[in-house]
Length: 273
Image (tube, rainbow, N blue to C red; front, side):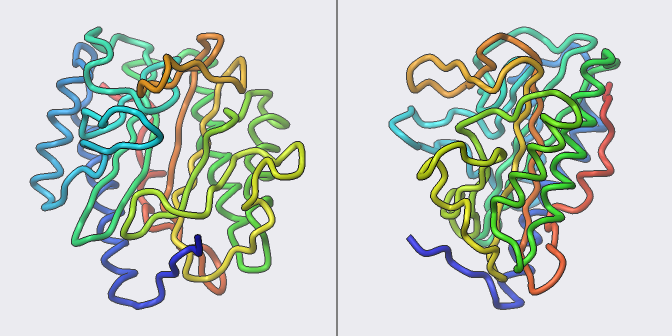
């Protein structure tokens, strides 16, 4: 399937507005989150903010790959939960030192915004702080490679070099970013690690074409690149139970420097509450 290109100024700005709805919701979350809140309470807060911003969740009710309809407004993934945590998969309140990755996807006037960030509650261990720093740095280094003279493998190579080469952590395998626009998921698939054999990642050598709108999202674990999942149920965990983080930006590939539509996420604090 060909990747739809976003070239009209009006479409680009509407997509940018959708992305900024996600950024604003993250900033509101960062000022509200505190120890003692549950995932269900966080999800309710997200729903209220999206309604206030005149957009809606594109995750709620989403179906993919034979999984049940996603039951929450946001993906709420604590500690060893890498992605796709639902508001009800645990009722445990957040406690000091917990990490929580919050992935928000919205629809605004037919366009999608989709971005994730990771927070620590009240305090962060040295390991957790280093892991969050790795997440921030790896996504920035990857985005810098999203230029028309490059292919997507340069993005993955930069992310993997940072995560595995500089920090000694693991890029989670089998998960990655994707094209967005008027649909939440469309080509290309954007891995966070370079392929190890032919055919593993068909889009690896696709050139970064101006007008392509993508959500890139390093998912990083302390101890393993492997995942654990119960059948087709939504939460995905690290196979060894080690800590994980998830960072995601929306990026428009241009004729020059990449345009980060979710600019402002990098101003979020690592520690909340």
